[in-house]
View 1 (cartoon, helix red, strand yellow):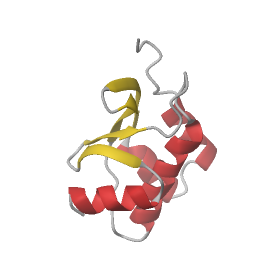
View 2: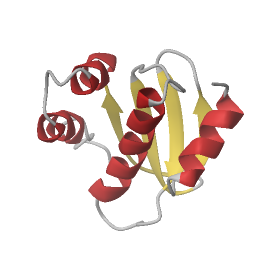
View 3: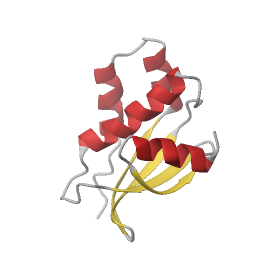
View 4: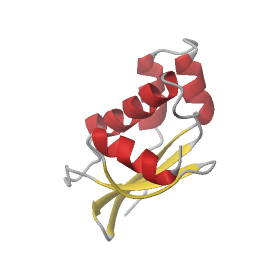
Length: 113
């Protein structure tokens, strides 16, 4: 799946993709629909569930995701990541959805100013 296809798929899941590089690791930035003080966890979940659906359908090969959440196009709100093995472990039922979510949420950059 190339970058434009991936961007289109993520937009279907309600993610306002600003930029994506579909390499390993996949680097993407998106403008949040919730520009409050903290990153919206449901929005993160939408993106991750979208990627998991694509992986289950054989349309995306799990890879590390490094995401930058933008409050506006030029203002970084926070960053998070998801490791390749977390996707693989969830897809193979070696970890639960709760464990997967916890792993990702713990990567939010608390030191970002």
